[in-house]
Length: 427
Image 1 (cartoon, rainbow, N blue to C red):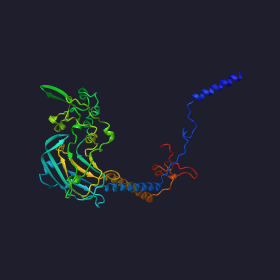
Image 2: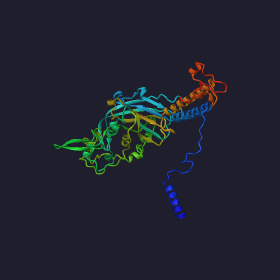
Image 3: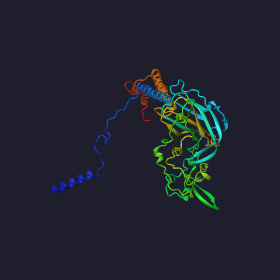
Image 4: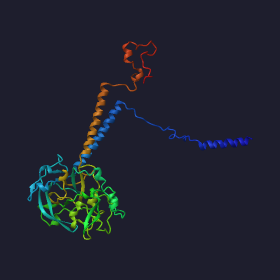
């Protein structure tokens, strides 16, 4: 009998251990870990704010210093077609901005000139387009710009982040998938630039717009030439600054595109704003659609900007841009007047933290000022109204209510508690 009872008890204890949900008896599971909490005395708070202020000031100073190490020149050529003439004329002073490394006030007034040439021609992948306007910019590089030198175009008042615009593309089409059809494009985010009816030989055919959507159609189509140095001797090749238009797009972005192999030219048509670059506005075997994966200007454009004023990369150079006078020719195609925007050419170096931008440094300095002011306020408060740490007389239940004090009920018998004290129950 005893053995059977013992076995029964062992089985029950085993079952209890298996079914028990009690946490393990460890410091972590039982919440017995050692902890430390700082006591925020006035002196501690004063030092904390002061140290944070000094730290923020140092960071802000370094950010501004890094920004001032960048040299850049920005030329607004939006009005070149209407404001420039066929001979060199000075550009308006507010159209030219320049910043030079180690300059005392951070900027130097640089004058620039521009002129336009009408009815010029330009070749796009072997197809000659005539009737274009060329804008020539002449400017001065005050000091050597050390490599790498980067060229950007800057657009203002262009809302790439508009909800309808930012979704207006078809990812499958950009990856050259065979599953893309006229029907699938009609049901995608590309309309109204998804398909188009084209009349041929008295019949109407529906063609896919390749690439479809508002983003692709509005591609920046100015062509920016290389800087050409003036006033020096030598061959044209030696006087032309060599920059590279490859390697400007993110490799992760380029993975989102593929070349369209063996395209059926009866099924696709360029976007409306692209058609001037193709004979009769159509793709042909001699002038096929572009290889989107290798067109890094297109890839960069398709990465939509979050703000209406933004920079897009155009090229970069791995050689020093020597100080001197330069000219740049730009085929002026991109229309900005319809939406009252602005466009500029920016040539800049880079610093430890990227391009020129004083805003992060200014924000850090403002934060430093806030911390220092708070530190001074605590110093002033502690000086004018000091209080002892852990003073129990300041607890609510040790204070005499104003009403009881006014009635004279705040006095207590000797050795007894004050009858006017708050009991703490009302808290």
